[in-house]
Image (cartoon, rainbow, N blue to C red; front, top):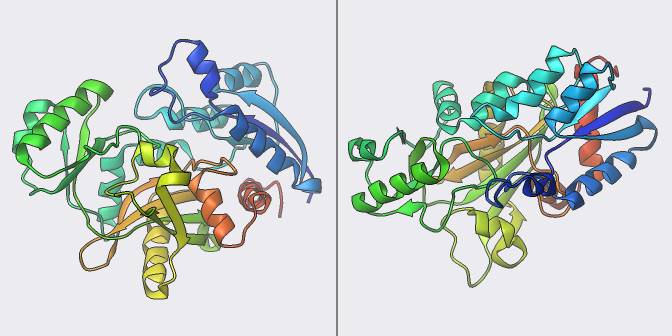
Length: 334
C-alpha cells in the first residue's frame, strides 16, 4: 500500500461571496474551517496519504489538468454552481482527463441531485418512498391530486436549501402559494411529497459493491422546546441548539433503515460513501427521501461525521474508509 498524492477539489463560500454571489446561493458550499479540518483529517492518515494539494473549485482543477498535472486521487467535494447536473461537473472533468477521483460518477451525481428522478429510480426498485408530484409552473399546482398535509422543496437543491417552516402545508391554497414562491426564488420545479409523520433518520454508508456497509443509523429530532416538522436550513445552521442526534436504539427499526438505505445506495449506483435520508410513515416503515452522494464532511457539524462519531468511528477513520474504498476501486491499492 503506497502513500497517495491527493488533490482537494471544493467550492469555498468566501470565493463566491467575493464574486458577488448571495449567501443563499452559496449555502451548499464549504467554509474555510471545513476544508482545513478535512485537510488535517487526511494528513492524519499517515503513510496512506503522502501529500494533500488544495486545488479549489472545478475551474481551477480544469486548468491544472489541462496543463498536464495529475494526482493519484482527486478528493472531490465540489458542488458546482449552475444546473441540475452541477454535481456531475467535476466527476465528468476527471473522467475526461483519466483522473481517478472519490465518490460517485457523473450519472449518479446528476440523477441524485434531481430528487424526483432519484425517487422514480428508487420506486422502480420496489423501495418505499412518499407519493409525490412535480410542479413545473405555478398554475400546475392545481392539478396535484395528493391530499394535504404535503411537503414542498425545490427539486434540485441540497443542504436543505429552500426547506423552511413553510415547507409543510396543510391546505390547497398554501400549496399553490408555496409552489409559486419556490419557483420564483429557485427557478426550478418543486417536488411535492405526501408528508410522513414518523421519525426521521439519516444513514451513513461507506464502501463499494458487496463491501458497502452502514456506518450508523442516526435519528434526527428536535431538542426540547423546539418543534420539528423537517430538517430545515435553519435547523441545520443552528443544530447545536435546535437539534438532537442519537443512534437508533430500536434494532428492528435500525435494521430496516439499513436495508432500505443500502438498497437505495446500490440502486442509484453510489460509490465510496453517501448519506441516505429516511422518514417513517404512519406504520413505522422507513421511506426514502433523498440521497447525498457528496456528503458533507465538516468534522464537527456535518451529519455523516456526527453519526460516525456516535457509532465509534473517528473522523480520520471515516476519511480513511472513503479513501480506501476509492483507492481499491481505481486499482491504486489491492
